[in-house]
Image 1 (tube, rainbow, N blue to C red):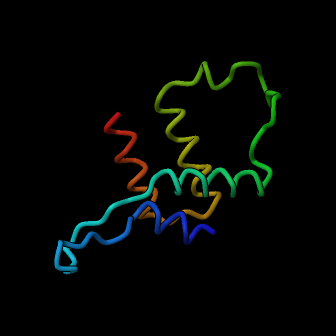
Image 2 (image 1 turned 135 degrees about the vertical axis):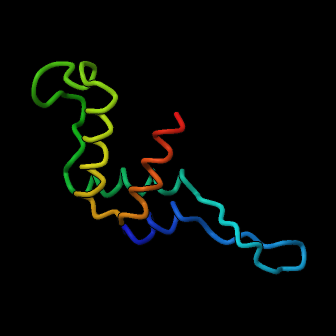
Length: 94
C-alpha cells in the first residue's frame, strides 16, 4: 500500500501531444492522502471521536511540533525518504 502512496506523491509521467515523455511528473496528492489515511486506519493510529491524552493537545502545539509529529507518523507508516522530502516541501510552501 505504501508503494502506491509513494507513486502517488511522485506522480505519473506527463506526455506531450505526440506521446513523448516531457520529463515532468503529475502527483496525485488526493490518492496519496487517501492511502495514508487508510494505512493509519488499518494500523489503528486514528482516534475516532475521542481525544487521546490531554484535551486539545494538538491545538496547543507549535507549527514545528506539528511538523515533527506528522513526519514521525509518516515514517512509522513506512513512507520513503523521498516522499518525506516532498511532504516537507509542501509544508514549507504553506
